[in-house]
Figure 1 (cartoon, rainbow, N blue to C red):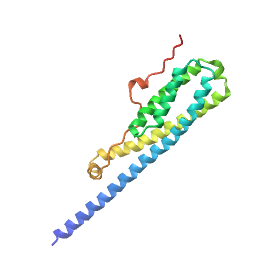
Figure 2: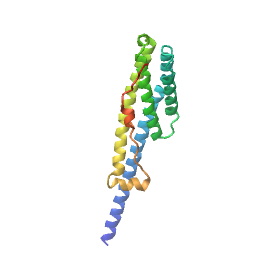
Figure 3: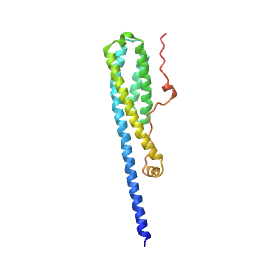
Figure 4: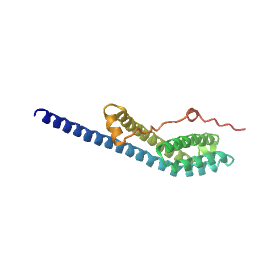
Length: 185
């Protein structure tokens, strides 16, 4: 007789734990999606700014067409990314090509004095700071999610309901971490 209420109590406690744990995962998953969406808004602003920046630099550095082509291609690839992993890889490539664009711009003193270029450069710097902050937030939320997915006993709930680890937004290869080398022959 005493065993039945104890068993029912345990079933209720386990059921409540499952519901609370699942809801916690849903909350963190939504935070991950919100963090990525926020970052995506800043990335969209950067995509919109890049053509203006490229056109301004083109006016001074007409023989640097390879750099402009790479920046445009990287922007297009980043904009057309369909998965988070693809977005991360393409964003890292775009950041590298933007470094090349600014390295080219440094070789043209008259461009460095152009107020339109300076304004676009400042806007991009502000956007890059906002993107960096949103990446930090995204990575912090992903860390929370991944820790919960891998930790016992919450990993049992994660596997039961299909919650998976999320990718961090980080620089991928050692090549992407290197400084850009610009040489004029």
